[in-house]
Image 1: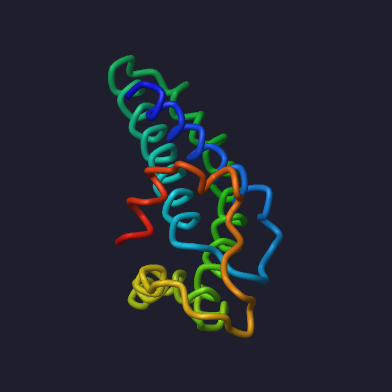
Image 2: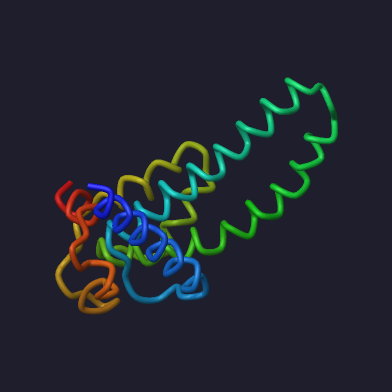
Length: 150
């Protein structure tokens, strides 16, 4: 069980690295597994960090912890670049134009890109044959199996 858990964690790290290293790639396609692994991992890290800083600033009542938000802000903005690229590739995989990702910045319509991220991979389309997964990532990945069967 411990070996499987370590293997899953390694796969998650590989997928997040893959998404970050492809931050400038707005062409092609991204699988649901790649998309949701990145979203859940980065969301957990960002929310966990913000929660921890909030708790520490309340406990110690020291404004020094609030200054860390000045560091978190630029880091969050930088993390938007791979997120937008990944969303564009995921929407391409659903067979739609990547420009729909701009709806994420319109409060009422921000749910549209999220809904599109749930659409299963389309057959080959004008953005490519299908999302190219890293061979090492898919191999023996229970995490991948869980997400691909949603």
